[in-house]
Amino acid sequence: MGNIFDDPRFTAVGLLSEAYTGLTNRFAAQFEQHRVSPVEFEVLMRLARSPQNQLRMTDLAGQTSLSTSGVTRVVDRMERGGLIRREACPSDRRSSYAVITGAGIARLEEILPGHLELVQRWLIGQLDPAQLTQMLESLRTIRDAVNPCATAGSTGEDHHDPTAGPAVTAR
Image (cartoon, rainbow, N blue to C red; front, side, top):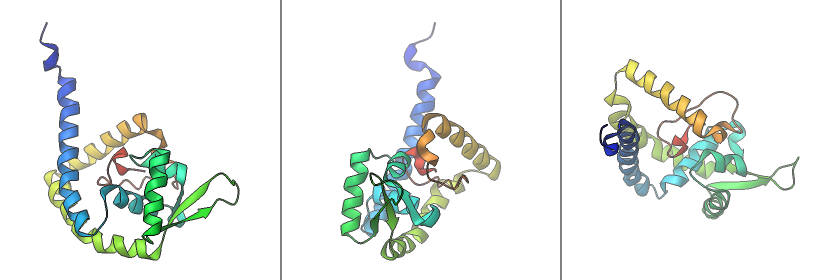
């Protein structure tokens, strides 16, 4: 029997982790130039790509790398910065929505050209179209198994953003 440390399952997880870390490190420097953290970018993208530019706070937590308390802290900070606002949920007093503001949309519009350039260079451009299609299908299958909350509050369409971060930001 071979050495347990040579198990190819470690290689699979390691490669995924190393690729993700490499991508996020390249994205983080660009986000910093625009005065947003990676998680703030993820929140802005999720809200901008959601119906009515809003998500319930619990759905936002499920779609990001944040806990419920973590999403509250990030939303509080972003609300003070004018990038998002909270709205009460009319049907459930215990719930509230995070909604992207015009200033939040404007900040995203500043960030996205450079971000998409990095995505093209370091992710999309590394694969031929068939490899990219297969990778997206594979990631979606894994995401749906390990993070079924990732699509909560969406329209049912998959608006996957392969750059958005843990939960690998897909909805």
